[in-house]
Every structure is written in structure tokens, then in C-alpha cells.
Length: 215
Image 1: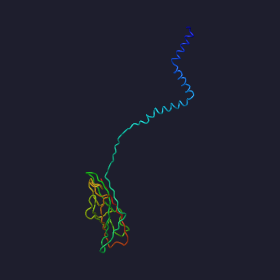
Image 2: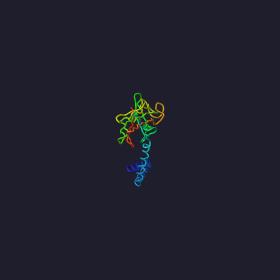
Image 3: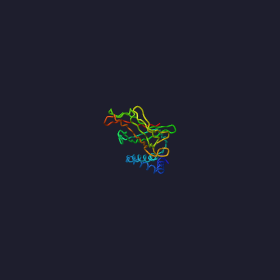
Image 4: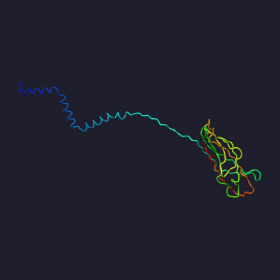
């Protein structure tokens, strides 16, 4: 067999061994050339589908946080906007009036204490009438629902605070148990104002300031 015939035979044998691969490759190339855009879109979709599970599979993390609150001793109170003392009984008998003071308090455990006091921050005006500085306004305390009401007769003062309620350690308003059963707490103050014949006629007023404290 001469050389050209031998070469032709080898080429035919190669075509018999790889007919489908050659045809398939040629077809893939033609499809790629005609539909390049479609192939590109297909590849993009394949990438999304491949990586989507990685986004959907979330990781769960936990942590803890310490929450703290500093609970301090504290107090709060309220009184009516005004009190009018009235005269009743015999001539020149004293004027009297009752005032209920509402308060809330919490004192420190073991070593705490508290108080509710009053002080006249302005004497009666105008001049010519009764005088707190002259010792003519007194009061008593009763029915304190937290702590102890003042004892005996107290003389109101323009220069210092005087007692209404005293409180010990570990006291608190409301909730029962170690605290009071009521909320708010109250104390009744009964005021007495002397009626001196020397007073000039007219309407007189004074300002009383109540203070609650707790430690």
C-alpha cells in the first residue's frame, strides 16, 4: 500500500472512532455562535441557583445582657391646693381646720429613715392679723398609715421645719407585706389658729411648705 492510501485509511479510522464527539462538538459550537445570549443567561441563572442555598441557610447566634437597676430611697407627697380654717363655738375661740397629706416613701433597709415635715415659708399677710412667727399657729397629727404621726401639739415655725411623720428603716408604700397596705399613705393634720381680739378685721393668708425625705 502506497503512502497516500495509507494516510487516507488512517483518517477514515479516526472518523470511525470519534464520529459522535466530533459532530457533538461542532453542534455545540454552532449553538453557541447562534445563541450566545441565551447561553449567557443560562449560566447566570445557574450561578444564582448554585449560591442561593448559601444565603438561605442562616446562622443563629445568642448572647446575654445583664440588666441592673439602682433602687434608691425616695419620697413623694401631695396636699390640697388650699385650706381654710374656720371659727366655731364661743367668741374668740380658735380657728381650726383639717388637712390630709398624701405621701409615698421608701426607706433603705436596716439603716434607713424618713420624715415628713412642714415649715411656714410666708407668714400671714397683710400685717395686723395672726402671726406664725408669734407662735399663734399650732397643729396635731394623727392616723399616719406609714411611719408614726407626730406626738403632742406642734407649733408651726417660719424658721425651721417641724415634724408631721417620722419613718424608720425598711418602710415602703403599698403592696402589703413589709410595705403598707395602702397607696398612697396619708396623715391627718389638724391646725389651730388663735383668735386674738387685737387682730384687725380682714382676710389673712400664709404659706406652708411640706417636705418628705427618705434615706
